[in-house]
Image (cartoon, rainbow, N blue to C red):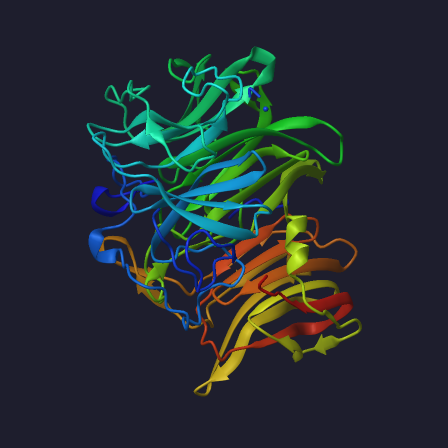
Length: 530
């Protein structure tokens, strides 16, 4: 995805450590440089992560009340798309866009991250924009004798093209392929963000790459020579803006036992969805062509702040992804001290079939459980035409199953407090009779923020998606972390992701209802730094 000087890039949801030391999340830390295959769409030029005027640098402010504790953040500067997610030789690797380069971090568990500085800088072919990494264990590329990682990314000089870099030392150093670009631009528009994987049935590498409001599929035997196989997208899904950051992977439908392929892509800034968003399709893939099983429009997240998600290849049988918590309507406008943006928590993906419709399920990875402190049980608490305080905290997990059969509206009020006589809160809730799940930050700490290209962007919005409450019960599994809220409803669809900048003094967590809502079972649990 690209922004900055180059420009950029009713919903269906269910009906203080130096580099080299481990950091938890990355709260308040300093940065340093240092088999096989075992952004927005009004412009068509490449995107740079941010103008120089928006790229703060210098020491991290440890006192910044909005710095997350357990979400990955940059020490300084502008974080954007996750890139190159891969599990290689016992380590999870997270690369990400940072001002047109690939920043790099590693982790044993996707929760504690160690920053390794910059992996891919600018070169003669321009910026190193979004892309992916593969483990070329069989050295099909001829570039990594004995095996290694190959990165496939978008270079920008002379138009967006796809290029390679490779590493034989666990990603600690990288070399550019001398034959770059491996897929030249040749007049293509909005041609970026390659995601590459090994397709075992056809014994070939497959690339999905954005091409305007289409996804192009390419095939290769060696990662260096690529042949176009097909395009996907005409007449399919939302075309509110340019498509970016695609991914394609097989996962199981847990309700039927079938395996299906999921094709995902993000959609740049647009008025139809009040900023950028992302969508997915479910179908089959034969190694060359993706065949959707229906024409439904499915969005990956009900919130405003989940973009450019990319998945790790299966590890321990799990498909896991994470995304950039940001929006191209206001990409670098957060009131934070010297750093901008954060990654979501990692989420395990599966499918289910609900009311005859197949849906993507997302749930927090089990590794998140290791962050829990001592839980406080709140079984039996209720609210009737009022709000009931459940606890306090801005770095917490709430996991509640609610009886909402007696409520026309039931919600959790997060980051709540009376600030200078004005109530600040973020609500996440359901309206059972209307079949609606919603996220509402209209009473949050920010109404508007500076938008792209000097415009003003609306931050205080309410978002609603369809969700049927079954038997009067709903589960709300919520993660709060200083400046973000992530909500997983029922079995993981819908999901909602929001940035939140309420006053740091707003600490209450409450249950509210029109009518009566009761906690059948639930707990409030502080989340701790390791």
